[in-house]
Length: 143
Image 1 (cartoon, rainbow, N blue to C red):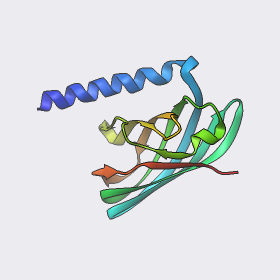
Image 2: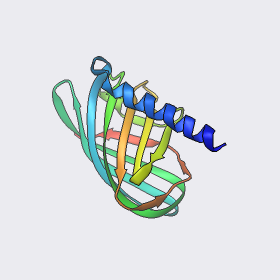
Image 3: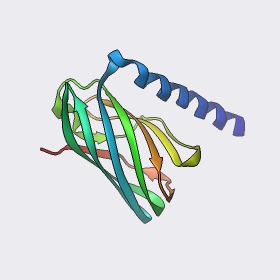
């Protein structure tokens, strides 16, 4: 069982590490920072910027999680794929994505929204947080 978990983590690292490198596939990038507060049910939020077609847009990300305990700050980056129109970025990213916690508080996730846009996220935690289930990340462009 331990070997299976290590193999799954290695496969996910390989997939997440190689996908963002394909510059031709990358439609945009994100830089963000935020925080978490939780006691059973948690709330995560982040603000950042989306760079798309040579323009920079302010964004807000938020999520509700279940089984969360703790509080933390975090910062990260993401590459965006399959983004045809700016408005396609908005929606809920989640389901069907792969994710795991890296050593020293790092996290990697591949998430997809209802418009077919994929986000490959690399984030670093700056505190203590234990999470069982994250329902999805709501993403909005702030005008």
